[in-house]
Length: 175
Image 1 (cartoon, rainbow, N blue to C red):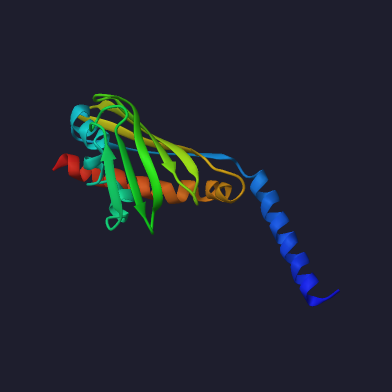
Image 2: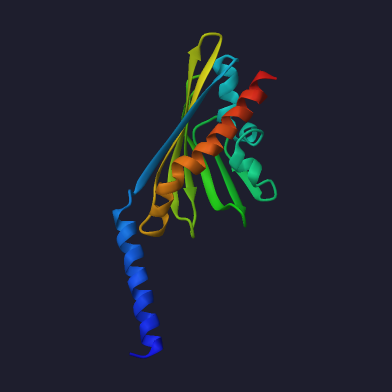
């Protein structure tokens, strides 16, 4: 067997293994973090439901300051959208799907190719003593096979970002 055929055979085996492992990995993930903020739910809600306000604390938006952002629709109303494009974060859109003042905000995030993934963010706000218990969860579906490898690392990677974001939200809200 020639060297070229051996290399092609090994590459074929590696590709097959990659596809097999990808097929065995979960197609979805869920990450959730929470924090208590010493402000009423209605005040915290504005910082979460308004995408312009999220730019002040959300680690993903802060990471991409040099990228292009635009928004459509009325802030804090269903249908409001926020689009982004940049080399370090790719392209995508976040749309406010459901919200209720002082109670919850639900968004859908659409990541455009090459990532090609959808995810839902949900922030719930519950009175807790003199403050608000804020829960931030993210659930996503990963395409086969490459993006399924993200499910292995989602808890660690997204969890750290959520912890940073919730801490920044707490600092901002309590100023």
